[in-house]
Image 1: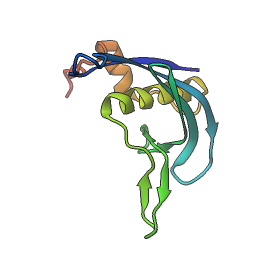
Image 2 (image 1 turned 135 degrees about the vertical axis):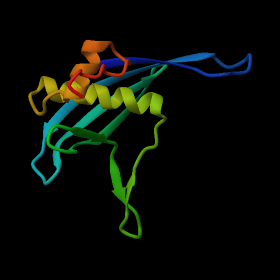
Image 3 (image 1 turned 45 degrees about the vertical axis):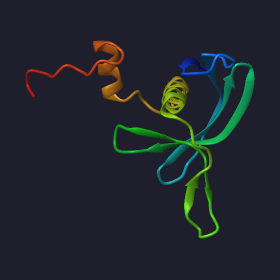
Length: 133
């Protein structure tokens, strides 16, 4: 299963640690057959030794060659779907990346072309423009 490490450095007082180590491990991916939904995932977030399990992460078709990773949702009292857990971008992005990597490894989706290009050009760098564009 995939694992990612994230370092979080925040301003702190002298009696608080200045950084935390966050590890994200994909525990499982399960195929699903619904309109846009094609898989569920479960992960474990380890924050300085405290493990938090998150189940019901949804992999959705977001276009002909795109996938979207969504955090678990619940229906509120008015029947509106709401995200069940709110995470900062520094945690959500590595979760989405780890889940996508696991889905690709299990053959449930292909790596998006944009991702392939970004990896070829260098992680975190915008893709170069083709001369034909």
